[in-house]
Length: 306
Image (cartoon, rainbow, N blue to C red; front, side, top):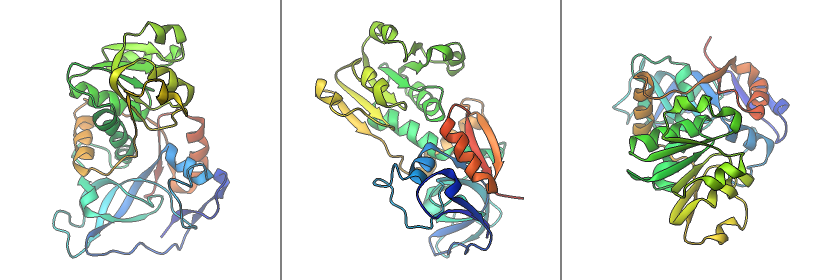
């Protein structure tokens, strides 16, 4: 099969598009997918560079990628819910490839009405955003929940979940993004690169942050005693000690096929949006990583079919 493999940590040029890569093995509990697309997430280029080698060690050469959408080609002997020809979507590993073998329990059917390739944008970002809000920020109906980086893909998912829970959602964006943030339908917006605006913000019950760094430290200061702070990026060392009553939790997205399907249904029904910035052929994975590191372009897809 054709796939993109990484032979050494470093720059995007280390991603090699190859033909003749061995097909993944199909076991009893797995489903073999003919991939339509994979998506590029920040964790991909951070792992590729070696920056997240400690958290996500690789056995090189390795195939990167966490999201896949496609059509079932074959199923293992223990699989009952999927059959060849089904359109499917899921989060797994090694998705920068024409064929992906993944656990059937991690897979969901793609609802009618969604584009097969574009749906690859969904899994990792929606699970991260949802778990930031539900599990880390511990959002409940009526609470004030601040989403840092609300216009990013993970941030949009976090806003969507917080709204569904009935929270008073505050969309944290940069000053120049304030007009654009109205599309999110949040209860409030705040410029998270404006120290005065942050200082004026009424204290919140929880934060779901996707920005990290210095911004995360400033947002932490607006959490009530006994509140919760969830983050998916980098949290400044020592900041949590300024208020030990606040629970701080880092989120690494956990697979949840039913939640992926829920977001896919909402996307189909126009209740949730996930902008696509670029659609590139699989062979241009290196360019996709360059674009991903530049940021701010919407989701980037690697089209595997054709």
